[in-house]
Image (tube, rainbow, N blue to C red):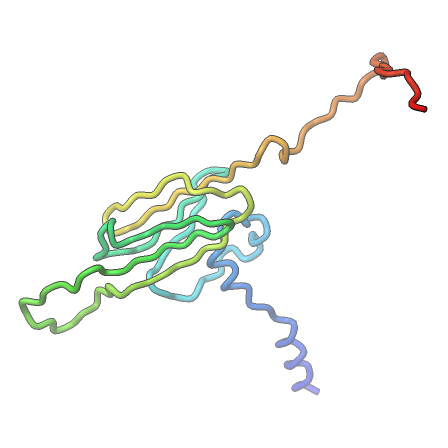
Length: 161
């Protein structure tokens, strides 16, 4: 019976970590997962909220120049790619290579109305600033309740025959 209980518990456990690690702007949906540690990967990155509707994705891209990085925002995805253009000349034998300079591609899912505002490369970190701008037509609005004095006016009284 204990084996059946364990199997039942395994079936009810969902791993949302991959979805949580690569989404931006779904804060309310994932607020229950705060403090959840994501799996390591290359290159490492942070996602932070800088204001109520503003976010920053910081990717560690040590060894990459600006012209070796590309950022693309298409539909609801943000893709960051890095590739070395030329192999560096090695004048000395490398005893240990801990700085990875291999090509990479990171894809982040963005919530509706999240757009890239700016990008900058500082001290080996690529910062991509995002903002959620909800159109006025989609924002909730307050409807005033009248006291019954405003009456509907008839515009056209002709009956089509």
